[in-house]
Image (tube, rainbow, N blue to C red; front, side):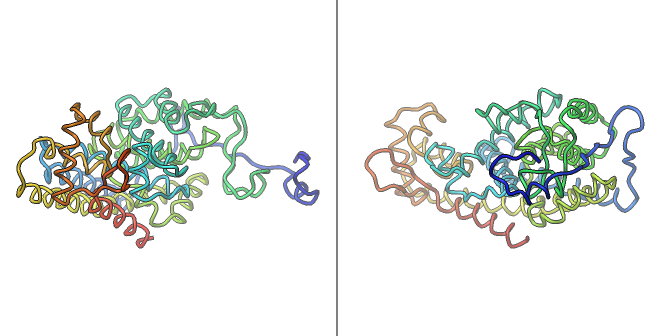
Amino acid sequence: MPDDGLTSRSARARGSGPYEATLPAHLAGENPLDLALSGDLAADVADAEQALTAFDAHARAELGSENPALGPMSAILLRTESASSSQIEDLTIGARQLALAELDESRSANARAVVANVRTMEAALRLADRLDFDALLAMHTELLAPSPDAGRLREQLVWVGRSGRSPRDAVHIAPEAEDVPAAMADLVAFLAREDLPILLHAAIAHAQFETIHPFTDGNGRTGRALVHALLAGKGLTRTTAPVSAGLLTDLEAYTDALTAYRQGDARPIVEEFASAARFAAVTGTRLVDDLAAQLEEDRERLSGLRRHALAWRILPLLIAQPIVNAAHLREALNVSAMSVQRALAQLTVAGVLQEATGRSRNRVWQHRGILTILDDYAEEVRRAG
């Protein structure tokens, strides 16, 4: 360990010596990792896939495929998943701060980081039908831009552990930098397979990505975005199930499963993803139902007032963006400032929105009901953990 002038002699001694970087298993080409499932695990995976499919169908049936709220519902599910994935990396943010950050109204560094993860997830779904090397780089670029490391394979050794100065005694030492391009090429070839159960495919791809750790930072969030790219690209889901929320309920089991995978045992990580998928399906269904019920309650509040077409158009948008300002609505709906102000006034009179700043300029309006639903969901995940 080099002397950087900041580390004691004893610490340098403890950090010096040999280490073993991981050599990831081959998933494609000759002698690939055996991914045959035992009967009980195959049944578990099939049940979890069926649960995700049922959740996806319920979300669409609850609203109807032509309902203008379906797109916003998909957006808020994606943001919920992004927030949970970020929380795994100790980036915790409430629904209000995340909504403010989407309007560029938050000073929270965590909120900005979670918004970047939302963009990563959006890129993952946008690129789901062509999961090649460039797609993986594009996801990472969305996460870390404008950092010079965004979308670039690392050129140094990285490890997972308490010490940032030495890989000695690290939980995981990733492959040497010169081994990363070949490992990524193997992973990309694996992503193209069409003969595996989709959830198994996603779990193994994620574990392999985390083992390679191809970037200097942002590997966990990019790797979990890859899961949803596979679920969508292979046709299992069309909405974003909160799988990371399921992983978040038992982080120790999740990290232990990744360690087991690196040691040659793929079963634990597949089990963890099957369990996370079931949690996502059950709790995600309740979240969809709660948001749909809130939307119906808002419609009833508006029905007693003089009908204003723009106010009705704004209602479903509030699911995805429960804090709004006039500029956001003008851009989203392509209408005049005066029309937006009239609609906001009507929504406020109806009790759907509350003005949150008390200012005469640069005002924002919030939907407390939707914010409460989203925060209650986050609390449910915390209690489950």
